Length: 585
Image 1 (cartoon, rainbow, N blue to C red):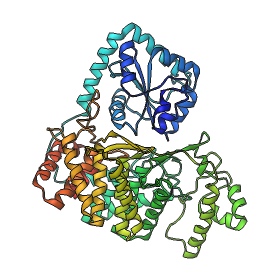
Image 2: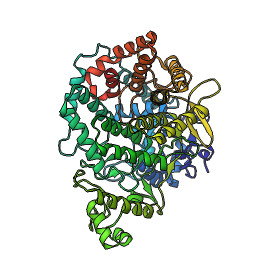
Image 3: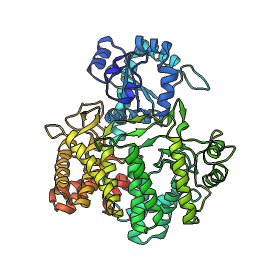
């Protein structure tokens, strides 16, 4: 086994038996690169990443690849969920250099940690116009030997340009029409046929829904409410929702929400729980309550540790096959349920003889009118679903990443607390409290620093901006629901610490703190993606704490942040949705 065998991260442990002599990120590997003047091969991924598994099987388990990596490079593996700061820095470079990026993220760095090449998945051998890892490693090794000083100079130039482009200070006063402008931009992006705000792939992007619900409700804009509700209903009807075991997958590869990428992430289900709860709160449609309850049932059943913290994710594949755990043939369902009930179930969930995905079936409700089912049939379907669930549960289960991330736990705490309040459900509130108490007891060190990651009884890594911002967000929501001053007190203290550790005097908050490892860039997390930006949630927190405490100093920080990012918000509002929600608040 290589050095990764001593690590905690499930992702790193997946590579412990590779013939590649992997190092974890740290002084041993970085020092060796400098001492031997070798480039660093940095590979970043996470344990439930489908293409990370593919590259591991095809390339990193191969002796020929390992021979080149071990001889000519210092190979380093990083779990992006364990070290989101490294991922943030290097994926920013990859996006600037190639125009896109994803995982696995593979880069070649100088011994000074400065990148000069970036890419994602590489097969072992070149094929179909894609360079193979063997050829790539050989070419870069020769380039390093023959043109090292040129490579270093080019790397420095690109790094300076990345810092300039990706850490802008686009100041300005917020446009008075920002809410209307944002709504109109979403209207232009909206898919009238299938819901959502892109063609394909389709990500849930709950921030768009939250904005439309808030805006539509407060301004009585029916169009905004309709876009939000249509999207929520189409997502639920699609295969992106697990109609057997519940919970949402990460995204849909098609425009109809039918075929998901089968990973289930804690953060997606937390944020969608908030979106469906809000939809119920503002419309009182029972469907939204039902969907939220299903999301929470999945999280409490499948992603909750015995101690109360929430695990990170479930893998997309089992036994090397994506979606295998979740798919059915029609014959399998008929054999399980019998002809009458089997046909009834298959007809309702779109399960066909020929299949709808690689000759098998993803249960879905795409062709169904959710308002046109009687209570008898609904009860019958639920009873049948329970049988299908228990049948499926006997299969080999997907890998579960049992890291307990402070940031994502904060989002889930907020989601459950909010849902508990709206639905009058003490179980949800108690689960939120257990998770909050777990983080407070286990992931705040003796000096009061919030820690990022907990696994196998150990918490480590100083918290990043998203850890502070998201956990404070959860604590504030929990305080609003329980009126327990302890949660408010801890939230306020962590907010004070966050402002000290991450604040940039020109406005806004850096991604990693002043006590964390210093990297080649110190980026700011400004733009919302599948995961909210740390600055956006910090905006919301400052607005909420100010409402509670009327602390003028906090209000001044809030105004400074608004001005620091105002120009960027005006120019590209849909990239700053949580910041705009803070303005609504």
